[in-house]
Image 1 (tube, rainbow, N blue to C red):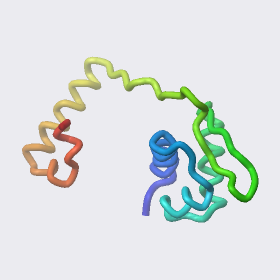
Image 2 (image 1 turned 135 degrees about the horizontal axis):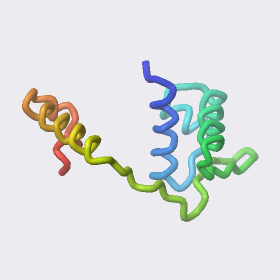
Image 3 (image 1 turned 180 degrees about the horizontal axis):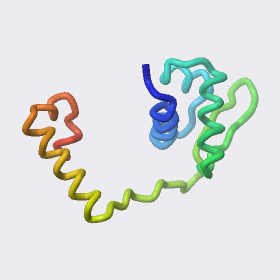
Length: 104
């Protein structure tokens, strides 16, 4: 079972990669009901993410045009911790399960 925070971030990722998604489409991808998907949208809106909703039978959610998340910024200590974690994952053979760790 996924943690709700993971699903909220997944909603944001889905909205960034698709022009628009309906409530039922989001719910299906998240494996939740439409009401829960709507709650996740509300959580993102409460955090200041500009999600627009079109009402009606063919309504959908979309990110406001031109919205982009700012890049992640790490302190030197945080960057070192991430680097060491990725190196450890490679040595333990965990990169096969998470190819993104290789950065290719």
